[in-house]
Length: 269
Image (cartoon, rainbow, N blue to C red):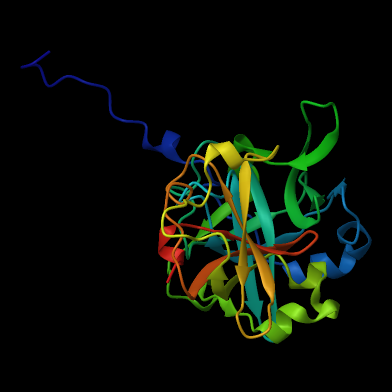
């Protein structure tokens, strides 16, 4: 085997997990989806199957590059005056090599499900939890080959990868707390209440039933609070929380309060 150059040619087609052919022309948008399915997105746990060829296009603005977002991609579309995003859930160990930040993709919604996971607008598939509850979760990886297409090459400098900076006034406005404003890539500023120079973001000793730890970001000007949520066992979770005012960029959602999940340690400035 050391001196015989006799081997099978590598099957590079087998490395592809997305569609090798075009899904067709874009005929839909994230904004249209949120408008058409408003009754779903205003509920807590609801979803339905899309049975028509609805093809939308967007850019990967957040992925699991830092291990904090599990089986989760943030798909963002800026189209004229519309700037909307939605979660695309895919069941595999690590999505970043296939879906880097700035990668444009097409998604055919036919055969997939849309609705809410908790309160967050999501594309995926239903699954049974360990408690026997039917919830909207990640779609099986093999569906990427029929429903997801890469478009061009990644451009992390594109507009969709630039976060929206949220002011304390915006965060305080009750009318903004709805599915039209999240999920989204945002930056928030403030001081972490629990930071003491030694405490890390997410020690296992503090994890909740969702294997995460919540920290409180406070704006010193008007006491506006945002939850910084971090799952355990990743680079961010073992990072010592910075003291003093910092900027934090990540995935915005809303539960009982505004919540931000960082993509990586580079999202702390």
